[in-house]
Length: 128
Image (cartoon, rainbow, N blue to C red):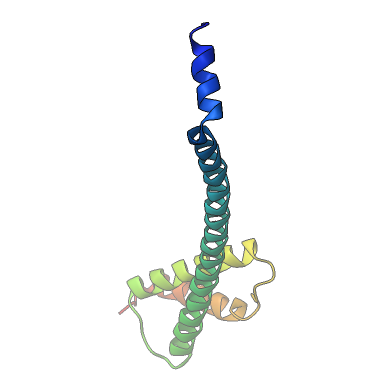
């Protein structure tokens, strides 16, 4: 161990040690900048995910309302089309339950009408 002391003294006295120390300090601040950028990126991704969820719910709402309009006009639909619309209703309702500030009252009457028509068609077996 005694042979290490002169080596350590030489390293400390040399400019190489100080350069190495500055590099470590710079590296640490560089890492904090990278960490800040990663955190900002994570926030952006979270915001994007939230916006995509709201967009999916809005798109489901549009499809629900359009489907109900078509039923009110007397247009027939296949069972698969009804099933897809019922999935849209579920998706929309789940999103609204998780996001209370999202406007939900818009589709309640349309959803009930679609479900009623579905039940009647299911009983009569008169899907397209």
